[in-house]
Amino acid sequence: MFKAILAALTIAASAQAQTAYTLEQCRQMALDNNIKIRSARYDIEAAKSQQRDAKMAYLPTVSATGAYFHANDYLMKEKVSLTADQQQQMAATVQGLGLDPTALAGLPSEFNIEAIKHGVFVSLMALEPVYAGGRITTGNKLASLQTEVKQLQLEQSQNDVRQTVEHYYWQIVSLHEKQRTLDAAEAQLLSIKRDADNAVNAGVALKNDQLTVELKLNEIAANRIKLNNGLRLARLVLGQYIGTESEAEVADTQSPQPTEIAAPATLFIAPDEALQRRVESQLLDKSVEAQQLQKRMKQGERLPSLAVGVTAYYNDMTSISREKLIGLATLSVPISDWWSSTAVKRQQIAVEKAKEEREDNLQLLKIEMQNCYDNLDAAYQQVQIAKKSIEQSEENLRMNRDFYQAGTSSMSDLLDAQTKHQQAKDQMTDALVEYQNARTAYLVATGR
Image (cartoon, rainbow, N blue to C red; front, side, top):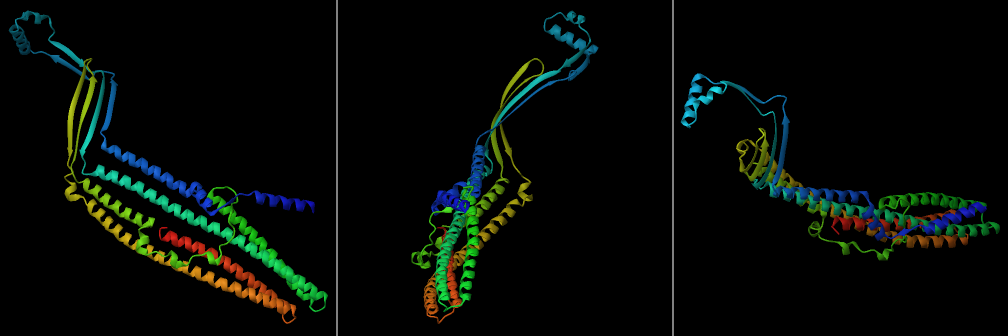
């Protein structure tokens, strides 16, 4: 018995020490820690890196080449023999220079020429694009567009995460409210049991009334176990989603009252106005823009490309080094693409397809908005119905209790009234939570 009391106190102490988070705190923690958000941020960084790479195309391309070789024999080997005529020609040339032609007599008429056994070659070239058919500018626009798309996708992910967090949050609030309803139902049953005990002891009621109430109390106990397990699971799911790595308790566990909820008409916004707020609408516009830029890229591939540059080289292959500096210009004209390529036509088809898909999806977004508004209106009506049901069930329970105490009603009728009252309160809790989820869904669907 002492151990059981100690365990209960330990559980109570740990529950009190557990951090409770408000809805806004849960939203912020999810935005900071959720893997979906982190992944979207990584995508933005990758897109920005690609954008920086695209800007480099405006700068000259610089390349360097260097080579050294050493052969096992001379690359140029030639045996040269001078004919008599060639020797006479050389003697005449030497005499014409005022030299003694007899000096040629000591030279051989045959000799070997050997050259280039090893050498070094180094070159450096810089080439600046002057005109590339607009592909450099278009490529930079595409890279910038990709970054904008990733940022919009991050915003879309943030909306999804906020909506999911609210769903888990209100689920926990709902379970807490049902716990309170269960506590109230148990207190009512205990009161009914005391009345039944007194009636049995006074001999005006049957023992069966006591047993019926006890069975109902056992049912309450079983429902409490299921409710506690569901609450623990919901806390674990929320904790994982917001990154606490443990059960997450919520701070405001009281369900909103029917008088606190706003009528759907106060939240309504025209679909055409809402479309301008939707991230999905902006992404559809970006999709069309991307296809149009891709078309420009294909058109640019069919235009001439002009570049100017300079190259410098150094070589030493005959023990005599040479350095040169050369200016150059290149012009590339893709002549065959003018009549053979269908890439531009295919890309134009892609543009038209993207436009039609955008219009179709915009219509679907409007349908989604209307559906979300209808769901919100239905949830609001359910709250009003649940409010009336609670009032009727309370009156029904009061009357049946009076009838039982007066001996004009059975215990089963009283317990049935008590069950209906409990069901009406649970129905109100579900209706209020459903309204909160429907409200969030409508605000997201209308870009708010």
